[in-house]
Image 1 (spheres, rainbow, N blue to C red):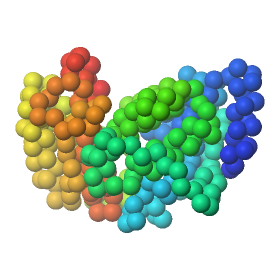
Image 2 (cartoon, rainbow, N blue to C red):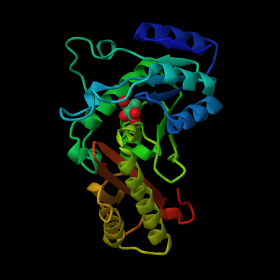
Image 3 (tube, protein in one colour):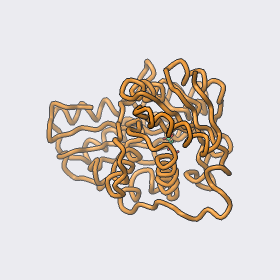
Length: 289
Ligand code: PAF
């Protein structure tokens, strides 16, 4: 029977009891409004661990003042059904006051990796993500934690944080899950009008184009990015925030398509700001993710 817990004390008690029995624990951190992308993370955790905890917490700290904290979609009942059906053992669903007690003033603030891509237009975002994820790690003390590759910069940042701060947790990155027409699954797709929803397919088309150019041997990063931008710009409802090619481990812009590369984009369609990407490890050209 899956439980839904609201307090840190309850979670700690349950996890301690599991650990006493020698059971391994996987954590899937989410902000709820779960879709098949989250479900694939939960499935992976259920496969790899004896117990799976899904946190459902819309973290106020990672939203900027003009972002969608208030309107971010929430549906705990539907989330609970999906989690239970997928084999999760616990949902941790704290109130903001449980996570951020009065007087809260300790943060995990990374330099470097957040100063690129989404971090440029969302300056407080990754400080909020690193802080809440490290809190969740301390609360749940998982053996493994699961993050989607759709948030590729977040994945790189969490991996770096775990390495830098010697957190004894294996970070498992999971592939992007897409709709039939290619649009990456996202809780924010709900913001799209029917016209914008159709238009948003241009993101996955741009991903495919970029992947093909690289697979065909294009080595100039700007050529790849410019062609992707041209494709997206031809869609009148698309408003590009960025399309960039960076090194996946450092988030530094690259000129040549070499090494472990991330080609990422953020594009607005009306109220929705959507992201998509592809990662290619050119150190091993056959391994296209
Ligand atoms: O990816 C998300 O949904 C959030 O950034 C996370 C990792 C749950 C932290 O709030």
